[in-house]
Image (tube, rainbow, N blue to C red; front, side, top):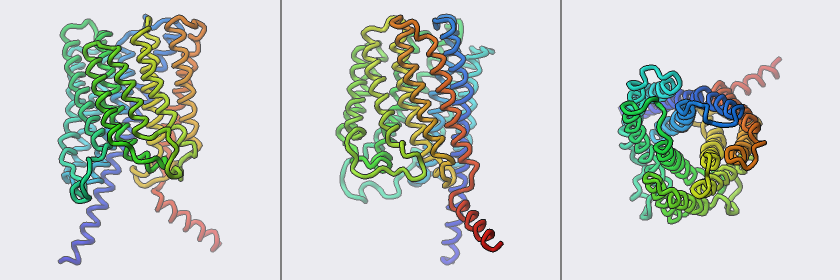
Length: 448
């Protein structure tokens, strides 16, 4: 009896792993779809129109918000949920039905994001569709949450000795709380808008407060958690400082809460302090302890990760400036772009192309050169956008209006290359099968 249990368990484990890999691959492809179509392409259309008119006043705010929602929730949120289902299933014991719940969560989540984007753009029965989209998104997240909350590490913390809980784990937990808070706030505002507003566009003042929560609440904290977990290995960094990371977390939460009551000067100062503490806590810019691991990816990988954290500092600095001097939205807009594109997108492009090929079937990245060009074009486009948005919107340098279109095209090229890089990678055989295929091909050539 015992002799048969081992192979049976191994077979079950392999089947479960393959099912998780398929689930993650679908989540990632869905995120790429949101990134490309309702996210980037709509954003490029909006920006080219703004550059042509030399003012954002003629663009429907609902369209701009549709673009932002597709990027933050449709792309970044989808990646976070997909990776969460996969990685937490790998790291500990969660229910056997996690995979089926993962598929149901995917259906609710992707349906909700799609409905939100379509409602903002076409406004068909929007008073019903807007809150319904928020309900679908919340349902998809709650399925994820109630599934992975049962996660337990394979080795309890007590079994590996006394000490504080790893900082990365705390940051990811708070990122999940921020995710839930964002979806709840989104649902409340969607309901209010459906009752009281004349269109699905959220009023500007409310949208400002939401964006502080949406940006600095769940994506930033989650990326800090993943950074604390992975970057000491990938970049050869010193272990993160738990004390500094907790201080960064506290300052970030204080900044978000202050934004909720429109205390923008305190909010931006607290968030700027959080960024400084996080950079020191993660040792991002300190001399590395070991050589970075760049096998299978472009050797510029560590440079772009540091660029991302540089953009995070730029975003926080611009937010402080915006709270003091913004007149036409240029400083606020450039701060958000530095955060969402400079920091979040650069981190996803860099870390995503480092880990997702392995997660989605133990594959090797299709082309490190494509990885480099996606990152290079993204950062070039972001630099042009941030500089030109400040100069054009705030009337410091009106001649910079045409550069907004240039930045849009560069960033569209970058995200297209990133999507192509991952999709081409997913089409390849897993690394071990590719090696066997190459070995057989070599033997065939020698035999002939």
